[in-house]
Length: 239
Length: 239
DNA sequence: CGGAGGGTTGAGAGTCGTCAACGCATGTGG
DNA sequence: CCACATGCGTTGACGACTCTCAACCCTCCG
Image 1 (cartoon, rainbow over the protein chains, first blue to last red):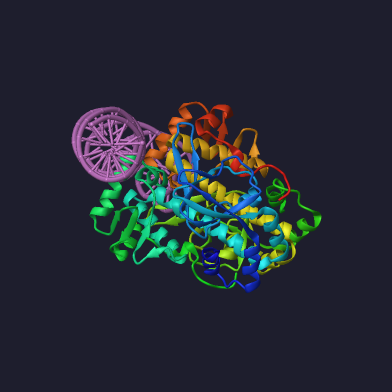
Image 2 (cartoon, chains in turn yellow, blue, brown, green; image 1 turned 90 degrees about the vertical axis):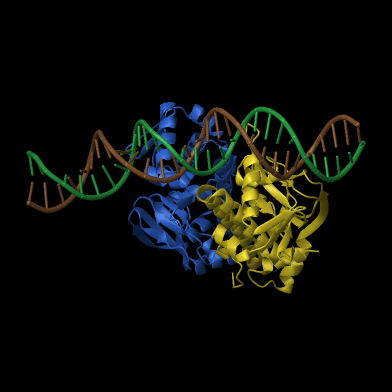
Protein backbone atom coordinates (compact mmCIF):
# COMPACT_ATOMS: atom_id res chain seq x y z
CA UNK A 1 0.00 0.00 0.00
CA UNK A 2 2.95 2.26 0.66
CA UNK A 3 4.48 1.28 -2.64
CA UNK A 4 4.39 4.80 -4.05
CA UNK A 5 6.08 6.18 -0.92
CA UNK A 6 8.84 3.59 -1.25
CA UNK A 7 9.21 4.39 -4.93
CA UNK A 8 9.34 8.08 -4.13
CA UNK A 9 11.83 8.00 -1.26
CA UNK A 10 13.72 5.06 -2.68
CA UNK A 11 14.58 6.81 -5.92
CA UNK A 12 17.06 9.05 -4.08
CA UNK A 13 18.85 6.47 -1.95
CA UNK A 14 18.23 2.86 -0.98
CA UNK A 15 15.76 2.15 1.80
CA UNK A 16 16.74 -0.67 4.16
CA UNK A 17 14.18 -3.25 5.28
CA UNK A 18 14.31 -1.71 8.72
CA UNK A 19 13.52 1.68 7.29
CA UNK A 20 10.65 0.30 5.26
CA UNK A 21 9.15 -1.26 8.33
CA UNK A 22 9.66 1.96 10.29
CA UNK A 23 7.70 3.73 7.59
CA UNK A 24 5.05 1.03 7.64
CA UNK A 25 4.73 1.50 11.36
CA UNK A 26 4.64 5.27 10.98
CA UNK A 27 1.71 5.41 8.59
CA UNK A 28 -1.65 4.63 10.15
CA UNK A 29 -5.23 5.66 9.65
CA UNK A 30 -6.43 5.72 6.09
CA UNK A 31 -8.90 8.38 5.01
CA UNK A 32 -10.73 9.40 1.87
CA UNK A 33 -11.63 12.81 0.54
CA UNK A 34 -13.98 13.78 -2.27
CA UNK A 35 -12.83 16.12 -5.02
CA UNK A 36 -13.05 19.69 -3.81
CA UNK A 37 -12.76 18.82 -0.13
CA UNK A 38 -10.05 20.27 2.11
CA UNK A 39 -7.56 17.63 3.23
CA UNK A 40 -5.84 20.09 5.57
CA UNK A 41 -7.30 23.46 6.53
CA UNK A 42 -5.34 26.67 6.48
CA UNK A 43 -4.59 27.89 9.99
CA UNK A 44 -4.98 24.44 11.56
CA UNK A 45 -2.35 22.75 13.71
CA UNK A 46 -2.52 19.09 12.69
CA UNK A 47 -1.00 16.44 14.96
CA UNK A 48 -0.17 14.26 11.97
CA UNK A 49 1.13 14.59 8.43
CA UNK A 50 -0.64 13.28 5.36
CA UNK A 51 0.65 11.01 2.61
CA UNK A 52 -1.25 10.67 -0.65
CA UNK A 53 -1.93 7.08 -1.64
CA UNK A 54 -4.15 7.86 -4.58
CA UNK A 55 -5.50 10.96 -6.26
CA UNK A 56 -4.34 14.48 -6.97
CA UNK A 57 -4.14 17.24 -4.37
CA UNK A 58 -2.86 20.80 -4.25
CA UNK A 59 -1.65 23.34 -1.75
CA UNK A 60 -3.27 26.74 -2.07
CA UNK A 61 -3.72 30.18 -0.63
CA UNK A 62 -6.71 32.46 -1.09
CA UNK A 63 -6.43 36.25 -1.23
CA UNK A 64 -8.89 38.86 0.00
CA UNK A 65 -10.34 39.43 -3.47
CA UNK A 66 -11.17 35.73 -3.72
CA UNK A 67 -8.25 34.94 -6.01
CA UNK A 68 -6.75 31.52 -5.41
CA UNK A 69 -3.20 30.39 -6.14
CA UNK A 70 -2.01 26.81 -6.04
CA UNK A 71 1.55 26.55 -4.79
CA UNK A 72 2.07 22.90 -5.61
CA UNK A 73 0.43 19.80 -7.01
CA UNK A 74 0.76 16.59 -5.02
CA UNK A 75 0.72 13.13 -6.52
CA UNK A 76 0.65 9.66 -4.96
CA UNK A 77 3.69 9.05 -2.76
CA UNK A 78 3.92 12.73 -1.76
CA UNK A 79 3.70 13.95 1.80
CA UNK A 80 1.40 16.94 1.41
CA UNK A 81 2.18 18.49 4.79
CA UNK A 82 5.26 16.82 6.17
CA UNK A 83 6.59 20.25 7.06
CA UNK A 84 3.65 20.80 9.43
CA UNK A 85 5.54 18.44 11.73
CA UNK A 86 7.96 21.31 12.44
CA UNK A 87 6.16 24.40 11.16
CA UNK A 88 3.23 23.52 13.44
CA UNK A 89 0.70 25.97 11.99
CA UNK A 90 -0.57 25.53 8.43
CA UNK A 91 -0.21 28.83 6.58
CA UNK A 92 -2.18 27.45 3.62
CA UNK A 93 -4.74 24.79 2.79
CA UNK A 94 -4.51 21.49 0.94
CA UNK A 95 -7.41 20.51 -1.29
CA UNK A 96 -8.27 17.27 -3.05
CA UNK A 97 -8.52 17.92 -6.80
CA UNK A 98 -9.75 14.39 -7.43
CA UNK A 99 -11.02 11.76 -5.00
CA UNK A 100 -8.06 11.14 -2.69
CA UNK A 101 -7.08 8.25 -0.51
CA UNK A 102 -4.54 9.30 2.11
CA UNK A 103 -2.81 7.83 5.15
CA UNK A 104 -1.60 9.64 8.24
CA UNK A 105 1.71 9.88 10.09
CA UNK A 106 1.56 10.94 13.73
CA UNK A 107 3.94 13.77 14.52
CA UNK A 108 4.95 11.96 17.70
CA UNK A 109 6.08 9.02 15.60
CA UNK A 110 7.87 11.29 13.14
CA UNK A 111 9.65 12.84 16.08
CA UNK A 112 10.83 9.46 17.31
CA UNK A 113 12.16 8.71 13.83
CA UNK A 114 14.27 11.86 14.04
CA UNK A 115 15.55 10.63 17.41
CA UNK A 116 16.42 7.14 16.32
CA UNK A 117 16.74 6.83 12.54
CA UNK A 118 19.08 9.52 11.22
CA UNK A 119 19.31 8.18 7.68
CA UNK A 120 15.56 7.91 7.31
CA UNK A 121 15.29 11.38 8.82
CA UNK A 122 17.61 12.68 6.14
CA UNK A 123 15.47 11.07 3.46
CA UNK A 124 12.32 12.66 4.84
CA UNK A 125 14.15 15.97 5.07
CA UNK A 126 15.26 15.47 1.48
CA UNK A 127 11.66 14.97 0.45
CA UNK A 128 10.81 18.43 1.77
CA UNK A 129 13.90 19.87 0.10
CA UNK A 130 12.77 18.60 -3.28
CA UNK A 131 9.46 20.26 -2.56
CA UNK A 132 11.42 23.47 -2.17
CA UNK A 133 13.33 22.85 -5.41
CA UNK A 134 10.01 22.46 -7.22
CA UNK A 135 8.82 25.72 -5.69
CA UNK A 136 11.91 27.48 -7.03
CA UNK A 137 11.32 26.09 -10.48
CA UNK A 138 7.73 27.34 -10.33
CA UNK A 139 8.93 30.80 -9.34
CA UNK A 140 11.23 30.86 -12.37
CA UNK A 141 8.38 29.69 -14.57
CA UNK A 142 6.02 32.36 -13.27
CA UNK A 143 8.57 35.14 -13.52
CA UNK A 144 10.49 34.54 -16.69
CA UNK A 145 8.85 31.96 -18.93
CA UNK A 146 6.11 32.59 -21.47
CA UNK A 147 2.78 31.12 -20.43
CA UNK A 148 3.01 28.40 -23.05
CA UNK A 149 6.47 27.50 -21.83
CA UNK A 150 5.24 27.50 -18.25
CA UNK A 151 2.46 25.08 -19.11
CA UNK A 152 4.84 22.87 -21.06
CA UNK A 153 7.19 22.86 -18.08
CA UNK A 154 4.37 21.84 -15.76
CA UNK A 155 3.48 18.93 -18.02
CA UNK A 156 7.11 17.82 -18.18
CA UNK A 157 7.38 17.95 -14.41
CA UNK A 158 4.15 16.08 -13.79
CA UNK A 159 5.00 13.41 -16.32
CA UNK A 160 8.39 12.74 -14.72
CA UNK A 161 7.05 12.78 -11.18
CA UNK A 162 4.17 10.48 -12.07
CA UNK A 163 6.49 8.14 -13.91
CA UNK A 164 8.52 7.60 -10.74
CA UNK A 165 5.46 6.32 -8.90
CA UNK A 166 4.24 4.33 -11.91
CA UNK A 167 1.21 6.46 -12.57
CA UNK A 168 1.88 7.09 -16.25
CA UNK A 169 0.55 5.05 -19.11
CA UNK A 170 2.96 5.18 -22.01
CA UNK A 171 3.27 8.87 -22.81
CA UNK A 172 -0.05 9.69 -21.14
CA UNK A 173 -1.02 10.58 -17.63
CA UNK A 174 -4.26 11.36 -15.87
CA UNK A 175 -4.73 15.03 -14.96
CA UNK A 176 -8.14 15.39 -13.30
CA UNK A 177 -8.33 19.20 -13.21
CA UNK A 178 -10.53 21.77 -14.90
CA UNK A 179 -9.04 24.63 -16.88
CA UNK A 180 -10.12 26.96 -14.07
CA UNK A 181 -8.01 24.95 -11.62
CA UNK A 182 -5.08 24.96 -14.00
CA UNK A 183 -5.47 28.75 -14.23
CA UNK A 184 -4.95 28.85 -10.45
CA UNK A 185 -1.67 27.01 -10.97
CA UNK A 186 -0.29 29.38 -13.61
CA UNK A 187 -1.84 32.50 -12.12
CA UNK A 188 -3.99 33.26 -15.17
CA UNK A 189 -7.62 34.03 -15.89
CA UNK A 190 -9.71 31.12 -17.09
CA UNK A 191 -10.13 32.69 -20.52
CA UNK A 192 -6.46 33.18 -21.10
CA UNK A 193 -5.65 29.76 -19.68
CA UNK A 194 -7.90 28.31 -22.34
CA UNK A 195 -5.98 30.18 -25.04
CA UNK A 196 -2.63 29.06 -23.73
CA UNK A 197 -3.79 25.46 -23.69
CA UNK A 198 -5.10 25.83 -27.23
CA UNK A 199 -1.76 27.22 -28.35
CA UNK A 200 0.13 24.27 -26.89
CA UNK A 201 -2.38 21.82 -28.33
CA UNK A 202 -2.21 23.45 -31.76
CA UNK A 203 1.56 23.20 -31.80
CA UNK A 204 1.00 19.45 -31.81
CA UNK A 205 3.19 18.49 -28.86
CA UNK A 206 0.40 17.44 -26.53
CA UNK A 207 -3.17 16.26 -26.62
CA UNK A 208 -5.55 16.72 -23.75
CA UNK A 209 -8.97 15.11 -23.58
CA UNK A 210 -11.01 13.34 -20.94
CA UNK A 211 -8.71 14.65 -18.23
CA UNK A 212 -5.83 12.78 -19.79
CA UNK A 213 -2.70 14.47 -21.12
CA UNK A 214 -0.82 12.70 -23.89
CA UNK A 215 2.65 13.85 -24.84
CA UNK A 216 2.93 13.58 -28.61
CA UNK A 217 6.45 14.99 -28.95
CA UNK A 218 8.50 14.73 -25.76
CA UNK A 219 11.59 16.20 -27.38
CA UNK A 220 9.79 19.31 -28.52
CA UNK A 221 7.82 19.67 -25.28
CA UNK A 222 11.05 19.66 -23.29
CA UNK A 223 12.47 22.21 -25.67
CA UNK A 224 9.50 24.58 -25.35
CA UNK A 225 9.72 24.20 -21.58
CA UNK A 226 13.51 24.32 -21.36
CA UNK A 227 12.97 21.40 -19.00
CA UNK A 228 15.97 20.14 -17.03
CA UNK A 229 15.00 17.52 -14.42
CA UNK A 230 18.07 18.12 -12.26
CA UNK A 231 15.96 19.89 -9.64
CA UNK A 232 13.96 16.73 -9.03
CA UNK A 233 17.11 14.96 -7.72
CA UNK A 234 16.30 11.70 -9.40
CA UNK A 235 19.71 10.16 -8.89
CA UNK A 236 20.29 7.43 -6.40
CA UNK A 237 23.25 8.17 -4.15
CA UNK A 238 24.14 8.11 -0.45
CA UNK A 239 22.33 10.91 1.38
CA UNK B 1 30.18 36.06 15.14
CA UNK B 2 27.37 33.55 14.76
CA UNK B 3 25.00 35.89 16.54
CA UNK B 4 22.68 36.24 13.57
CA UNK B 5 22.49 32.44 13.17
CA UNK B 6 21.58 32.07 16.84
CA UNK B 7 18.98 34.84 16.50
CA UNK B 8 17.58 33.17 13.41
CA UNK B 9 17.38 29.59 14.68
CA UNK B 10 16.66 30.68 18.24
CA UNK B 11 13.52 32.55 17.33
CA UNK B 12 11.69 29.27 16.66
CA UNK B 13 12.75 27.29 19.72
CA UNK B 14 15.38 27.66 22.42
CA UNK B 15 18.94 26.65 21.62
CA UNK B 16 20.82 24.91 24.43
CA UNK B 17 24.41 25.83 25.22
CA UNK B 18 25.43 22.44 23.86
CA UNK B 19 23.67 23.17 20.59
CA UNK B 20 25.25 26.58 20.35
CA UNK B 21 28.69 25.07 20.75
CA UNK B 22 27.86 22.35 18.22
CA UNK B 23 26.97 25.10 15.78
CA UNK B 24 30.14 26.98 16.68
CA UNK B 25 32.12 23.85 15.94
CA UNK B 26 30.22 23.27 12.72
CA UNK B 27 30.96 26.63 11.14
CA UNK B 28 34.52 27.08 9.97
CA UNK B 29 36.32 28.91 7.21
CA UNK B 30 35.27 32.47 6.67
CA UNK B 31 35.21 33.87 3.14
CA UNK B 32 34.37 37.13 1.44
CA UNK B 33 32.69 37.82 -1.88
CA UNK B 34 32.42 41.06 -3.83
CA UNK B 35 29.06 42.25 -5.11
CA UNK B 36 28.19 40.41 -8.30
CA UNK B 37 30.34 37.37 -7.55
CA UNK B 38 28.93 33.86 -7.43
CA UNK B 39 28.98 32.41 -3.93
CA UNK B 40 27.88 29.01 -5.18
CA UNK B 41 27.85 28.02 -8.83
CA UNK B 42 24.93 26.32 -10.52
CA UNK B 43 25.70 22.70 -11.28
CA UNK B 44 28.41 22.42 -8.63
CA UNK B 45 28.47 19.80 -5.89
CA UNK B 46 29.75 21.66 -2.84
CA UNK B 47 31.11 19.72 0.12
CA UNK B 48 29.97 22.42 2.53
CA UNK B 49 27.02 24.72 3.07
CA UNK B 50 27.27 28.48 3.36
CA UNK B 51 25.96 30.78 6.06
CA UNK B 52 25.73 34.50 5.48
CA UNK B 53 27.35 36.58 8.19
CA UNK B 54 27.01 39.92 6.47
CA UNK B 55 25.62 41.19 3.18
CA UNK B 56 22.78 40.36 0.84
CA UNK B 57 22.74 37.35 -1.49
CA UNK B 58 20.23 35.75 -3.83
CA UNK B 59 19.51 32.41 -5.45
CA UNK B 60 18.90 32.60 -9.16
CA UNK B 61 18.38 30.72 -12.38
CA UNK B 62 19.19 31.92 -15.87
CA UNK B 63 17.13 30.95 -18.93
CA UNK B 64 18.31 30.38 -22.48
CA UNK B 65 17.22 33.87 -23.60
CA UNK B 66 19.40 35.40 -20.90
CA UNK B 67 16.50 36.19 -18.57
CA UNK B 68 17.36 35.84 -14.92
CA UNK B 69 15.00 35.09 -12.07
CA UNK B 70 15.88 35.34 -8.40
CA UNK B 71 14.14 32.69 -6.35
CA UNK B 72 15.04 34.05 -2.93
CA UNK B 73 16.89 36.79 -1.13
CA UNK B 74 19.22 35.77 1.68
CA UNK B 75 20.05 37.94 4.65
CA UNK B 76 22.56 37.54 7.50
CA UNK B 77 21.86 34.41 9.53
CA UNK B 78 20.51 32.52 6.51
CA UNK B 79 21.97 29.29 5.22
CA UNK B 80 22.01 29.94 1.49
CA UNK B 81 22.51 26.32 0.45
CA UNK B 82 21.85 24.14 3.46
CA UNK B 83 19.79 21.89 1.19
CA UNK B 84 22.87 21.11 -0.91
CA UNK B 85 23.84 18.87 2.01
CA UNK B 86 21.18 16.42 0.83
CA UNK B 87 20.33 17.56 -2.68
CA UNK B 88 24.02 17.21 -3.60
CA UNK B 89 23.92 19.01 -6.94
CA UNK B 90 23.13 22.73 -7.10
CA UNK B 91 20.36 23.29 -9.64
CA UNK B 92 20.82 27.08 -9.41
CA UNK B 93 23.42 29.65 -8.48
CA UNK B 94 23.83 31.94 -5.50
CA UNK B 95 25.14 35.44 -6.11
CA UNK B 96 26.33 38.15 -3.74
CA UNK B 97 24.22 41.29 -4.29
CA UNK B 98 26.41 43.28 -1.93
CA UNK B 99 29.83 42.48 -0.46
CA UNK B 100 29.24 39.30 1.53
CA UNK B 101 31.05 37.74 4.43
CA UNK B 102 30.14 34.06 4.78
CA UNK B 103 31.22 31.05 6.82
CA UNK B 104 31.14 27.41 5.81
CA UNK B 105 29.67 24.24 7.29
CA UNK B 106 31.21 20.97 6.18
CA UNK B 107 28.64 18.45 5.01
CA UNK B 108 30.45 15.74 6.97
CA UNK B 109 29.90 17.74 10.15
CA UNK B 110 26.28 18.40 9.25
CA UNK B 111 25.86 14.70 8.79
CA UNK B 112 27.25 13.96 12.22
CA UNK B 113 24.82 16.48 13.68
CA UNK B 114 21.97 14.51 12.12
CA UNK B 115 23.41 11.37 13.72
CA UNK B 116 23.85 12.77 17.19
CA UNK B 117 21.76 15.90 17.76
CA UNK B 118 18.16 15.25 16.77
CA UNK B 119 16.74 18.46 18.16
CA UNK B 120 19.33 20.60 16.42
CA UNK B 121 18.70 18.58 13.28
CA UNK B 122 15.03 19.44 13.50
CA UNK B 123 15.89 23.12 13.86
CA UNK B 124 18.09 23.01 10.77
CA UNK B 125 15.38 21.12 8.93
CA UNK B 126 12.92 23.77 10.09
CA UNK B 127 15.16 26.44 8.64
CA UNK B 128 14.85 24.86 5.20
CA UNK B 129 11.11 24.46 5.69
CA UNK B 130 10.71 28.18 6.29
CA UNK B 131 12.65 28.69 3.10
CA UNK B 132 9.97 26.63 1.40
CA UNK B 133 7.20 28.63 3.06
CA UNK B 134 8.76 31.82 1.73
CA UNK B 135 8.89 30.27 -1.72
CA UNK B 136 5.18 29.51 -1.54
CA UNK B 137 4.42 33.05 -0.54
CA UNK B 138 6.46 34.28 -3.51
CA UNK B 139 4.52 32.01 -5.84
CA UNK B 140 1.26 33.49 -4.56
CA UNK B 141 2.64 36.99 -4.99
CA UNK B 142 3.76 36.30 -8.55
CA UNK B 143 0.54 34.62 -9.53
CA UNK B 144 -2.24 36.54 -7.88
CA UNK B 145 -1.05 39.87 -6.49
CA UNK B 146 -0.77 43.14 -8.36
CA UNK B 147 2.83 44.18 -8.93
CA UNK B 148 2.56 47.00 -6.41
CA UNK B 149 1.17 44.58 -3.86
CA UNK B 150 3.95 42.11 -4.66
CA UNK B 151 6.60 44.76 -4.06
CA UNK B 152 4.90 45.85 -0.85
CA UNK B 153 4.83 42.23 0.29
CA UNK B 154 8.52 41.85 -0.43
CA UNK B 155 9.33 44.91 1.64
CA UNK B 156 7.19 43.64 4.52
CA UNK B 157 8.93 40.28 4.41
CA UNK B 158 12.42 41.74 4.25
CA UNK B 159 11.72 44.17 7.06
CA UNK B 160 10.48 41.42 9.36
CA UNK B 161 13.29 39.02 8.48
CA UNK B 162 15.94 41.70 8.94
CA UNK B 163 14.42 42.78 12.22
CA UNK B 164 14.89 39.28 13.62
CA UNK B 165 18.63 39.46 13.02
CA UNK B 166 18.83 43.09 14.18
CA UNK B 167 19.62 44.52 10.79
CA UNK B 168 16.90 47.17 10.75
CA UNK B 169 17.30 50.74 11.90
CA UNK B 170 13.97 52.04 13.18
CA UNK B 171 11.62 51.63 10.25
CA UNK B 172 14.48 51.56 7.72
CA UNK B 173 16.61 48.81 6.30
CA UNK B 174 19.47 48.64 3.86
CA UNK B 175 18.58 47.16 0.47
CA UNK B 176 21.69 47.25 -1.72
CA UNK B 177 20.08 46.30 -5.04
CA UNK B 178 19.54 48.12 -8.31
CA UNK B 179 16.11 48.36 -9.87
CA UNK B 180 17.28 45.90 -12.52
CA UNK B 181 18.03 43.35 -9.79
CA UNK B 182 14.69 43.99 -8.15
CA UNK B 183 13.07 43.41 -11.55
CA UNK B 184 14.64 39.95 -11.50
CA UNK B 185 12.93 39.32 -8.19
CA UNK B 186 9.45 40.31 -9.35
CA UNK B 187 9.87 38.97 -12.89
CA UNK B 188 9.41 42.37 -14.55
CA UNK B 189 11.21 44.48 -17.11
CA UNK B 190 13.42 47.22 -15.73
CA UNK B 191 11.16 49.91 -17.14
CA UNK B 192 8.03 48.55 -15.58
CA UNK B 193 9.82 47.85 -12.30
CA UNK B 194 10.65 51.52 -12.18
CA UNK B 195 6.99 52.44 -12.62
CA UNK B 196 5.86 50.02 -9.93
CA UNK B 197 8.39 51.45 -7.51
CA UNK B 198 7.26 54.97 -8.38
CA UNK B 199 3.65 54.01 -7.73
CA UNK B 200 4.47 52.63 -4.29
CA UNK B 201 6.62 55.65 -3.51
CA UNK B 202 3.91 58.06 -4.65
CA UNK B 203 1.36 56.39 -2.44
CA UNK B 204 3.50 57.63 0.44
CA UNK B 205 3.97 54.35 2.30
CA UNK B 206 7.68 53.94 1.62
CA UNK B 207 10.70 56.00 0.73
CA UNK B 208 13.71 54.56 -1.04
CA UNK B 209 16.95 56.43 -1.49
CA UNK B 210 20.63 55.60 -1.17
CA UNK B 211 19.84 51.90 -1.16
CA UNK B 212 17.84 52.34 2.00
CA UNK B 213 14.13 51.58 2.28
CA UNK B 214 12.15 53.49 4.88
CA UNK B 215 8.65 52.38 5.77
CA UNK B 216 6.59 55.50 6.29
CA UNK B 217 3.27 53.77 6.99
CA UNK B 218 3.62 50.19 8.17
CA UNK B 219 -0.11 49.74 8.63
CA UNK B 220 -0.89 50.75 5.08
CA UNK B 221 2.05 48.85 3.62
CA UNK B 222 0.82 45.64 5.25
CA UNK B 223 -2.64 46.36 3.94
CA UNK B 224 -1.47 46.87 0.35
CA UNK B 225 0.56 43.67 0.63
CA UNK B 226 -2.06 41.68 2.53
CA UNK B 227 0.93 40.67 4.62
CA UNK B 228 0.44 37.94 7.21
CA UNK B 229 3.73 36.84 8.80
CA UNK B 230 2.42 33.42 9.86
CA UNK B 231 4.46 31.74 7.14
CA UNK B 232 7.70 32.96 8.73
CA UNK B 233 6.99 30.83 11.84
CA UNK B 234 8.21 33.46 14.25
CA UNK B 235 6.77 31.83 17.33
CA UNK B 236 8.94 30.12 19.86
CA UNK B 237 7.69 26.65 20.71
CA UNK B 238 9.04 23.11 21.07
CA UNK B 239 9.97 21.72 17.68
C1' DC C 1 -37.02 19.86 -21.00
C1' DG C 2 -34.35 22.96 -18.26
C1' DG C 3 -30.38 23.99 -15.48
C1' DA C 4 -25.58 23.60 -14.16
C1' DG C 5 -20.83 23.13 -15.06
C1' DG C 6 -17.15 23.20 -18.12
C1' DG C 7 -14.98 24.74 -22.55
C1' DT C 8 -14.56 28.18 -26.39
C1' DT C 9 -14.70 32.59 -28.75
C1' DG C 10 -14.95 37.78 -29.61
C1' DA C 11 -14.39 42.61 -28.24
C1' DG C 12 -12.55 46.26 -25.62
C1' DA C 13 -9.74 47.87 -21.79
C1' DG C 14 -5.85 47.59 -18.74
C1' DT C 15 -1.20 45.88 -17.85
C1' DC C 16 3.37 45.17 -19.24
C1' DG C 17 7.39 44.78 -22.60
C1' DT C 18 10.42 46.90 -25.94
C1' DC C 19 12.74 50.60 -28.02
C1' DA C 20 14.56 54.87 -27.51
C1' DA C 21 15.90 58.97 -25.46
C1' DC C 22 17.37 61.89 -21.64
C1' DG C 23 19.16 63.25 -16.87
C1' DC C 24 22.20 62.71 -13.25
C1' DA C 25 26.18 61.17 -10.60
C1' DT C 26 30.58 59.16 -10.66
C1' DG C 27 35.08 58.36 -12.34
C1' DT C 28 38.89 58.62 -15.59
C1' DG C 29 42.26 60.73 -18.55
C1' DG C 30 43.95 64.79 -20.65
C1' DC D 1 39.71 72.06 -14.62
C1' DC D 2 37.23 70.07 -18.49
C1' DA D 3 35.74 66.32 -21.84
C1' DC D 4 34.07 62.08 -22.06
C1' DA D 5 32.41 57.39 -20.82
C1' DT D 6 29.74 54.53 -17.83
C1' DG D 7 26.05 52.97 -14.87
C1' DC D 8 21.68 53.72 -13.15
C1' DG D 9 17.17 55.89 -12.85
C1' DT D 10 13.34 58.05 -15.41
C1' DT D 11 10.05 59.04 -19.11
C1' DG D 12 7.32 58.63 -23.61
C1' DA D 13 5.41 55.96 -27.37
C1' DC D 14 3.67 51.97 -29.20
C1' DG D 15 2.81 47.16 -29.61
C1' DA D 16 2.02 42.72 -27.30
C1' DC D 17 0.08 40.25 -23.69
C1' DT D 18 -3.62 39.42 -20.44
C1' DC D 19 -8.02 40.59 -18.09
C1' DT D 20 -12.95 41.29 -17.94
C1' DC D 21 -17.42 40.99 -19.75
C1' DA D 22 -20.38 38.59 -22.51
C1' DA D 23 -22.14 35.28 -25.35
C1' DC D 24 -22.57 30.61 -27.12
C1' DC D 25 -21.61 25.62 -27.24
C1' DC D 26 -21.66 21.02 -25.37
C1' DT D 27 -22.51 17.34 -22.03
C1' DC D 28 -24.48 15.62 -18.12
C1' DC D 29 -28.29 15.04 -15.12
C1' DG D 30 -32.48 15.83 -12.56
